[in-house]
Image (cartoon, rainbow, N blue to C red; front, top):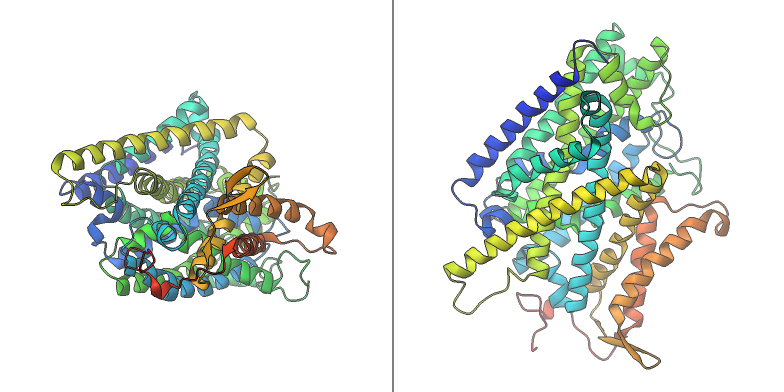
Length: 524
């Protein structure tokens, strides 16, 4: 490690950083920390801050470390091919802004899965919310696990701190600055963390330029003349994991499902005063995200160029390339900005995930958003607030144990498989929302199997991910080398959609236009 950047110095940097986050939390929550502020910030969030903060939440610690490493690793997302996915994002964001956001605002939702209750029924509501909780718990734990591994290797491990303590401190800090303000605080902390993340990447590029004794124009030429500059892949056909159309449509689907149908990402949009501000936020956010990804891919190319020029061995795990160079080979300033960027990237995703998990459980399973005749009195509101605090602590503890479970497993391939498996749960969400938006059908409550009556919708939503996993695992053999990649989301969603149609009562039609403001059918 760079001799002028000791583990103690890194801990000092982290301590100062979190002191700033806690200060922001205090300032944003002192004038209101009730459930309405926690869930939706009183619907007063300024859209420019939300737009910038969502960039950090979208990139996350995985992107911060893994996207630069993938540039020269070969296989999926090599070189600049990841930009094909990013361009696909734009199509997805257009759908969100034109179709989903108007629906959410018209219904006045706190949890977006409340829509499923009115349109399809209570089973759809609970299944959608459960799949979100499952996906986010595994996803947030995986991202924090990657960051904890880096901190353990370069910071806390050399100081003799056990891994469990590292994880506990990591999660406790998130809880500390989110338990009062919730999304009201997240809007501001995520903005700061996005700025830190982008500055970290930009300054690392600057330090590499200094090490290579070249300026910005020289670095652009180095990238252009390297093996890492190719962006578009049209020649390889559908068996190529970097095929343009495959990547482009995957990006659109990823955006629709993991942003538009994800409570974590949509909660920020719903915290704004009106639909127009939310749509301006999505447009601005999508543009900024393009340039942010170009920055990280350029950083990745320069990391490989630097490693080659000074004769460094490329780590077997490509996501170790950035931390290894920043903390061991570049000047101390590069190590400082890397630590800040890594922490910012991890926490901008994890803190909003913890808030969204708390919100979804409180609203979707504890019914805190249900209307009460005459409104809730002060005693009931205080009880709801206590429940919210308990749920917030509960999810913090759950994340802690899931991360420890990842550490116990030890096998990175197995953990990656678990992370990928969590992604399959977005397929039923895609199918459920597509069924609600684009059909007029109603799903039958139960299906008769022998002497048993089982919930039809639950069977479909359990079967679709399992079938998708089996098909995805064997697609290369069954389909002449074709591999789904992220397109498995579309297949998964299609299976769910077709299953719901097959189990529908075709004599009972209903359209979105025939619903009340709460999403329930007119005349019901």
